Image (cartoon, rainbow, N blue to C red):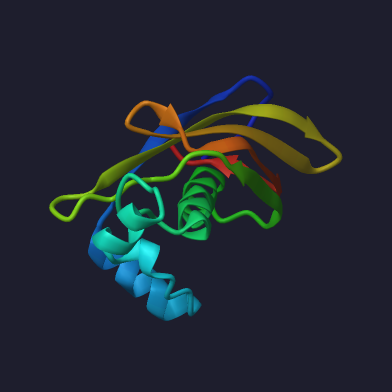
Length: 137
């Protein structure tokens, strides 16, 4: 493990999101909105298909941050939900999380992130701030 330095590029993480993941997340979170499980309902409200929970997508970002920083304390994690992650019935949707170290000051490391699915940004202005960060190669 080595210290994170400003400008360092973090290795891209790819997460495959399946419909089974959405069912499990709904059970864990209590969010049983049918747009996350029922194709017909999702289409009827104008969505392109079943979509992942926004907070599940953000949780994947948290997983990447934990891996990059060796489980450092997360002080801040946030983003705007800008585009849905459409999850097909067969296979899954690949969510890609990458980033760079924006700054290191006063024991805090700010990470500027990019989160995409199918080449499209799905989270706007995602960032994380951690304490005592180290990167895993």
